[in-house]
Each structure stands twice: as structure tokens, then as C-alpha cells.
Length: 117
Image (tube, rainbow, N blue to C red; front, side, top):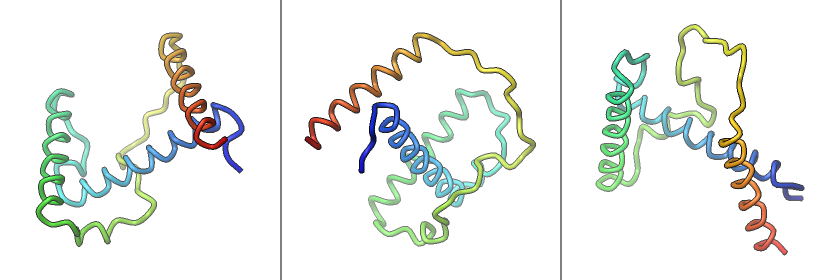
């Protein structure tokens, strides 16, 4: 039985994407030590470091399709940051983002319905 509404489909896809991203960061952390600890570089530099690691990873995969280190990554990944947790006490909704998410969820659900009818 598939998702019953747009919210269920969106949550399913969002969860799946998050798992892929967490697994990817786990693999990148195995390869590059700079990603294993909190970074104190400016955000722009952090983004460039991550992009460089991803580009290197993709280049290596194009030259060596099977990565022996990938076998060392468990199916469930550890948290990206092992330090003390920062707690968020309040979250303010933003109507622009909420509308964008709702429109995306509706579009995804309609496409899913059309493929599965």
C-alpha cells in the first residue's frame, strides 16, 4: 500500500533522501579527515571543502568503480557531529517556505498518482 496523501509521500521521499545524504557524508568522512570534526572555517570555505571532497570522490569512482572503503560504512550512519548537542527551543515557520514545500508535495503526489493509476 502506497502513501495515502501528499504529506505521506513527501515524508517518505524526504526520509529516503536524508538517508542517502547521511550515508554519503559517512563515506566522505571515511576518505577525508577534514570532514570528521567540526569546522571553524567560514561557511563559504566549508561549502568549498565539501564540494572538493565530492568532486574528488566522483573522480575516484570514475577511475575505480568499486570502493573498498564503502564496505566499511554501516547501513545506519552515525550523527554528522559528535559534539554537544545544540538544542533549538523555538522554530518559526516561514509562509514562503511552507507554501513552496506544500506545492512541491502536491506536485510529487500528483505525479505519483498518475504513474500508479
